[in-house]
Length: 308
Ligand SMILES: [Zn+2]
Image (cartoon, rainbow, N blue to C red; front, side):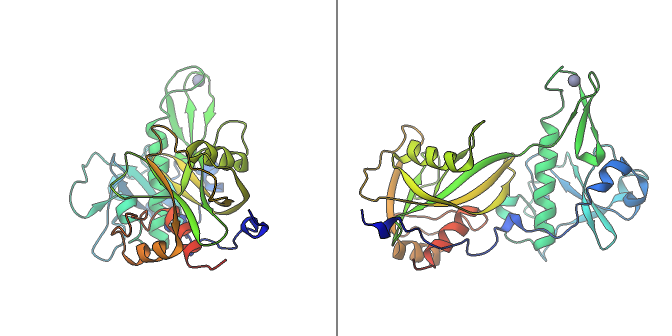
């Protein structure tokens, strides 16, 4: 290997990840003082989210929101406060409605349609409501917990312990050869021809950089260097935070896909990636790229459109 190969490419994400956009002020200080406060509620609007993370999006690609007072004079104990913008407070509530209709969409299919404000509201709503669904019992004593701090904590009815919303860090890494090839892989459960960059969850006691090196080695059997951070995106399916990295590896090292986890791994030329980006989801040379809404798409496009 020549030293140029390990020089590292200077590409970045081509644009901010779609689910990393947001505009509302989270107003963290209101969570302590308010605890169900009525004042914000009266000017508030509510986003309804079904059990599958779907919500109604209108013909102008805006979230459909309802006046909060339609749900009662005081804040619903099940409502979570997403933030405040232009003196309007935004809340989210789980609905029993089964959003099977065409105008109900989840973040994967609707996230790209939404403007910055609505993308941030829905991403936070889906993540926070999902956490509540799975935090009903205290992890220490097993007693039931209740929602407090306008949805930003739960308190145990047995030992009074408070628990806060969790997110799981996961790394995702674009490995290139430092020149014109990128390393892509596919999992057996993915749609036909779908390839993406490598990803995995951060383990306890592990740094992000160590996680990148471990995941790349485990999944495809190559050693990578020049690990650097690119950007992040919340991915509430159910509660990940994707941390994007770039790294460089030697394309002459044999690829050893992890049994059961990686069906195939291959080096793909920049020209194929550029053609696949143009093809918008149609396979090119057997490669279909991940959707626009994923940080993987932003990483791959950023790499492909920046000459090293
Ligand atoms: Zn407890």
